[in-house]
Image (cartoon, rainbow, N blue to C red; front, side, top):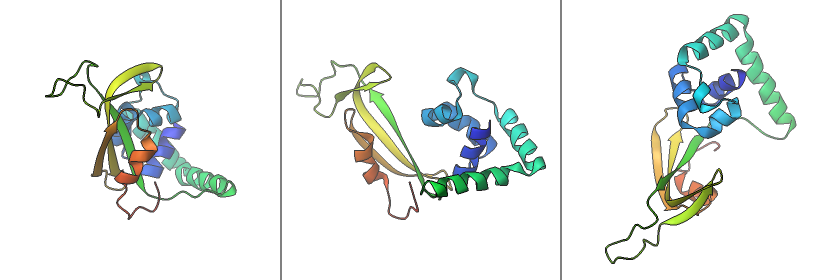
Length: 157
C-alpha cells in the first residue's frame, strides 16, 4: 500500500485512477508488489491515504524518498508516462499481395511468443491526457519508440 501511495504522489494519480492504473500498467503492479487478482479497490486505497494524511506521514515519506534519491544522484521531477502494448495478430496474416506483412514481427514477453506490432502512447503525467502515439514492429526495443513519444516540453520521463 505504501508503494501505491508513492506512485500516487509521483504521478498525481487519484484513488480511482490508482485502482485503474493497477489493472492497466504491469510495471506499477510489479513495483507495488501486487498480483492482478489481488488489486486493491479504490476504497482501500482511499482509506490508506487518509490514514497517512491523518498522521502527517504522506509528505514525510515523499521527502525521505527524495532525499534517498538525491544521495544516489537522482532527482524526482514531473514528466511523461509511456506505455507499450503488443497488438497480436495470427502469424499467418497476409497482406493484399498474399505476402506476410513486413511490419509484423515476433517478440517474446514473459516466456511467451507474440506476432504483431507494438503500440506506444505518451501520456502527460499531470493531466493524464495522451499527447503522442507511435507504432513499431513487435521486435523493436521500447527505447527506440520512446524518442518519438516525447514532445520536447517534458521535465523528465
